[in-house]
Image 1: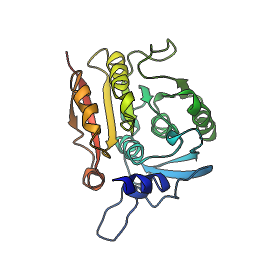
Image 2: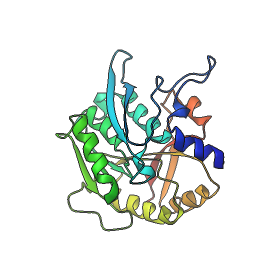
Image 3: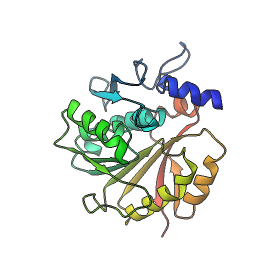
Length: 240
């Protein structure tokens, strides 16, 4: 498992590229994401002819959130496959955005997105918003899990998205608390994508089960591919 984590850090996109002729690919071959570089990612929308191109600055200096990680790629690809009609005009809030990739894709699909993380990552997110010319539909904001939700953020978004946020055990109860506070009615859809890496991940889901139920997303044709890499895409439902 430790070697898997080291390989993920060296090349977070390795799970998403075709490794042999017998495997399908989630994304076309992508450049390796490393520190202090800009990569271009392509996502297929509702039809193969329509592609979304995202330029992404990746930089590990502010922490691991400054890189592109596998679950973020999976969730971004799923949003793109759902197409523009599913997100156009919707209010979207991303937690633990890191580089902002998933929220950038949501904005490119016509959503009004807020990408959030801790202070050290705000500059890389702002740079990615500007680089993709999405300032009119993607806002960058600081959000510390477990702290009061800033008034500048939407309190009842249409969609909450989070990817690769299950890795730091002390933050587990804080993430659950923030999710619980943000989901105020059944209208809010919550998409939660994560890669299982450690046995400690079970502790997060033990905490989550007190506030939410969940099910695996059923309409993603790429599920058999990323599930082989221990990546799951879930839809959460708040308990009444």
